Length: 233
Image (cartoon, rainbow, N blue to C red; front, side, top):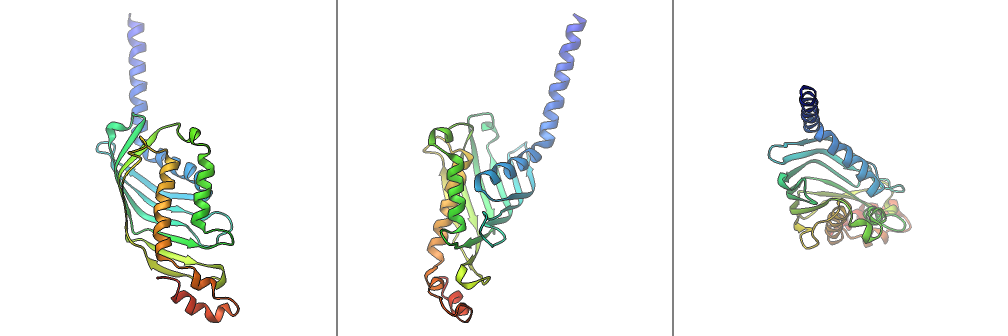
C-alpha cells in the first residue's frame, strides 16, 4: 500500500511539474508554431520577437511579427506589425474549435510588389492554397473561429518593376471582419490565413492602381516621378 501511494504521489508531482512547465513555456511554444507553420504556409520567412499570453484571462499580444516575401520579390517584407492584440476564450482551448473573441492588428506595414506574373500577395495566397491541399485534408485538425478581427492604420508600400527601386506609400482603409469561420464550423489556421490575406488584397486592389506605372515605358527613370504620383487613386 505504501509503495502504491508513493507511486501515485510521484505521478501527481510529475503531472503538476508538467503543467507548470507548459504554463511557463506556452509563449515560446506559440512563437515556435507561428514561425514554423507560418513559414511553411506562406513560402516566406516568418519571424516574431515575442508572444505574451495571460493564461488566466486569455488576453495577450504578439510583438514584431514579420512575414517576408516569397523568392523573386525585392521588398523586405510583405507584412509587418509591431503589435497584434488577442483575446481568446480559454474555455474552448480543449475543444475541436477554438474561439478567438478578438484580434486587433495595430499600424501594420504591408509591402505590395508587382512581379512578372503576379504580385507578392498573389504568390503568398498561391503558396497557402498549395499548403492546404485538397479540402478533405484541410478539414483535419483543430479549427478556429474569430469573432472580431480589426486591422487599423495600415500603410502599404508599393513597388513595380518598371520604376526600379522606386516605391510609394499610401494609407489603407481599416479592415473589420466578423465571425470568421462561424458558418463553416471553424477554419484551419491555413484557411484563416487565406481569409485574412484575401481581405487585405481587396483593400490593396481598391487603393493601388498599377496601370499608370505599367504605362511608364521607355525612359522609365525620367517618368518615375509622374508614375509614382499616379500610382494611387
